[in-house]
Length: 323
View 1 (tube, rainbow, N blue to C red):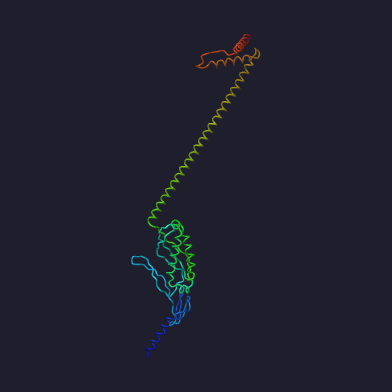
View 2: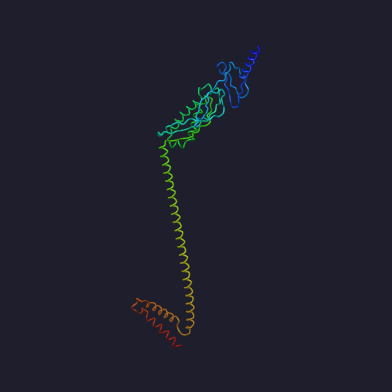
């Protein structure tokens, strides 16, 4: 009897333990009763009827590493459904672009289960379905773009792929938050061609910058020469003006001196004769002297008004004779 009571007590304890379910935060459990959906257990303490109530397991992805450090994923069944955001690293796949270039792409998908019941009953293998759906739509999107467009349009591809996946997985109770393309690796030959093209572009830019530098240098040199020529011309102009002003001042002074001398001569000759005849005669003699100057002058001639000069000289003589 004692043994029977001990067995019964152990059975009651095991039944109680199996009937008590504690659900943690951001987790849920789908409970079926006799093979049909019964209830969804929210976070907290719950009691179920163990013999006929069972938790429906769901396939999930587990990450693991080999002995040499390589990462890989495995699928397993879990009775607790995680409602947190999950990141899924898709294996690298080959995709053909619009210009028939095969590239290798690795994508990351961030999704979250918002309705555990639909995620469990609407699709058999949720992770695999999301993976295949992502790969198919990624091929379609990249197939519409050339290689150059694909390399510079990551954000566009991410946004379009996220919208497509979010609409397609809505009926599975899944919310796709974002998609990120990690690596886009073109073939080795394309990489070499791109590197050569990049180097050629850099050389072209360097040549353009050098030419622009030479051009600016030539412009600055020309402007400098222009300013130097302008300054030189301005200096010569100022020098000529000052020289002319000096000559004019000298002439004025000379004229003033000559005026003073003539005035004195006129004053001295005012009582002795005609001073105008004296002045005319002196000018004639001075002009005649200038005409006869020079090494190449071989002929000395008398001007047409020589008689007037002689008469003026004779007049001067008469004035001095009277004196």
